[in-house]
Length: 104
Image (cartoon, rainbow, N blue to C red):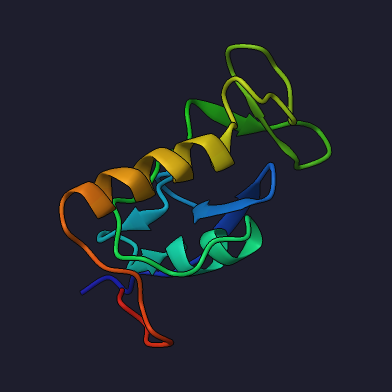
């Protein structure tokens, strides 16, 4: 049986699984929602994970979007906007914000 690593990569200040560039990845047993929410100033909430667009590391190891070849592309890597939308959808679906407990 193959052991799955929970290795992560940082793409423009957000964490994703290294293999699939997903914020929540069952294959990798990775969940970066709590860290990403905290970094962008949000309280933890049970919400859907976000995914990075096609990206690859440049010669310095910094991930950049394939579309614009930029490591700080706000169009492709607009995480705060994506997190805000994901949180709004979760709230609309009736999920509640945590009261100091880990909801993930």
